[in-house]
Image (tube, helix red, strand yellow):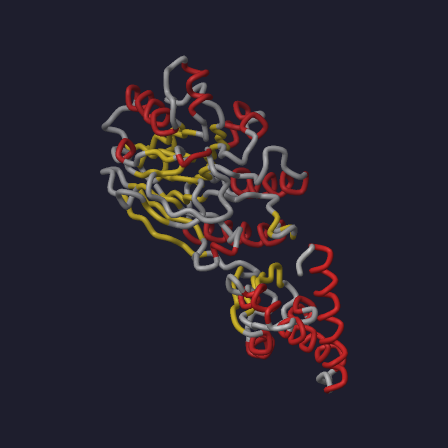
Length: 385
């Protein structure tokens, strides 16, 4: 049986207030191409299907179109669980009726130990899904004393292990933070104080574990306990990631073959660093100037409208950092002791960018006198002699 492990679609996501819906539509078209090319039997979506519990209508329409293309047009089964970004009850609406079409939505704890059994290529696989659930939800639902995420997750696994047949092929889906995982800036913390992680060891008995929540592709503990990662880069901390899906072959003996499949976004998410003139000059040779960019300028002087200048060559600069402008500790007092010469230099940079000419001697004297008078007035107001 050939499975496609995906997770963290985050449909409806914004990147620095810019909608990514069309980028998501394009990458999901690629996912459908992978399904066709690799002859996928079932697609697993390990949570965070939407980016928020009440998704925008356009995101719902996009999910509906993709699920129709998979289940109705291609006859491919889909198994999805809810993540911490999803509204579990909303995502699971109509789930009992949708099973007949091959869409299996596991978003509640009601039947945590009841598997979705799929058959293809002479192989039967039981798929168990653990939707995102915090300790309070597990404690309330089952009346058990679990106080942290690890205890809650272990309890749910124990309920599954108590009923499943160890001789049958079994895949686990879970939306959680496995201890030691590599996180990024775009993942919403599951709890305060760092008590959100769960152990990987209780999951090792499954033939494959399809995890969701962490956006970087990675495995924890053993190679078959794996995060596929998100379909797109959802923060600049993810710029080094290679995004995609994971192809999983399970045979009748339980042997598993795992293969990452990369997906190419319409626009990449990148970080550029350097002085403004060098960054702008580099745009002429950049093969993808429309990418989403964070630009980190190293210039150590004031620049007039750097964002406007950058967007003239890179239209999708979304964030600008200027670490070169951060003065070392104690710089401001030293500027005062030198009669405001740093302020004069700063104004001189500004004047040259506006007028195209440097301050002449008379202008420098006038500006220096003005700065000195303003500092004296400030000291008088503060009662400094």
